[in-house]
Length: 337
Ligand code: SAM
Ligand code: SF4
Image (tube, rainbow, N blue to C red; front, side):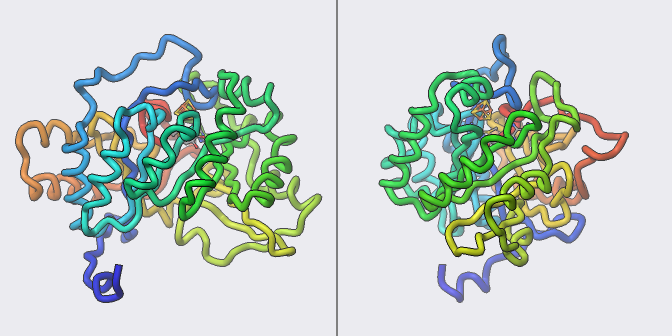
């Protein structure tokens, strides 16, 4: 985008004065994995397919927000690559003139087949979930025995040449410790930023406890035993991760301290579930039904008004650390992480 266009972009501000630039769009609540920190092992009730927003409906919302000041989109789920013809949606979104950046979060299982088509459709960046490089640990946490397919998906994506590929690893106490340095070293070797995310209370099994979170400072301690890290200034103002480079100049990591040091003051995003509910916070207990509005024939202006009204009451922050914390009814796979 040219400098002139950047100056013209409208600025979207929430009720707390935060600038909102990012919409996360869930395209399905279905998944081929059953990660312990996200989904139940079985008997999952999924949304009826008719409840899912169509590509046209998703694009309508994206067009509206792009005129309001949002210029970054991320597709997620559930597993977004399970949604049929996803590259078609990427292309439709890429054709919106005010959208600058389209990213995707995926478990990588289908990337060997889909990476090239997604890239060609306009996808710029990938976040790939990979919690463990030990095969048994991978199988335990994802409840699927397919580490190699995921590694192959990462390899294919590197070949295709995305602007950036980051690896997301959820950090769980008494599980992740031995995987931290292995993942860090993979990142340094393959030029991938590894991001460790503190385990959040969004698991469908509702087994989350504070004692099960491997905290950011503990992750840093593990890495510091072998490598000297250098904090990257102001990284929280750009995204949710505190980022660090290595003193030898090779590689970069990020730590998302969603529990121990929430980044809510810098939150610049809103979310839309696969069934078209706008959520102003990952932990919202209240949703705004855009699907109903769209299917009643709403104009772009109607949708814009509803989104502006929702943003006035965007939560100042989540309450994980307070006694008044209330878990959202939806688990992570149904919200869109
Ligand atoms: N299926 C895709 C994947 O796993 O990358 C996209 C959806 S998944 C819900 C998005 C991200 O949320 C993943 O990086 C996943 O590791 C993370 N996640 C899921 N449950 C979580 C939890 N309880 N705490 C922290 N992160 C979680
Ligand atoms: Fe599926 Fe992603 Fe949830 Fe794992 S984290 S169960 S891959 S949606």
